[in-house]
Length: 133
Image 1 (cartoon, rainbow, N blue to C red):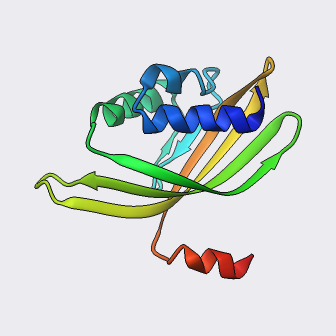
Image 2 (cartoon, rainbow, N blue to C red):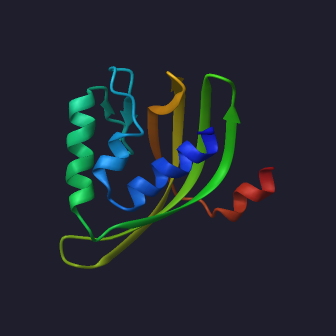
């Protein structure tokens, strides 16, 4: 499977709230790290899995992604995505925001697995990105 296919498989698992498919795309050897939008670092496989189980159980959110950049070598690859996220708050009001999602994968035994996931909330117009290219 190519990196591009592995990335798409990972993103589809997240968008579908499919915990089993998601777990098949992440490293299980303790190398996975996740940085949340608030700056909190998760470096325990168990707490990352628990966070995703809870998040995926909430069926009200949805997200779309736009690929901004990829870098691929024989053993490592990264993808920077612009995410449009929609949810509802505790009062049932719609909430929408954008964030950058940086994903780093490593090839382990011939399989691309996620080892780093970082989310950064943004408050700029995405069209501004095009001006900088």
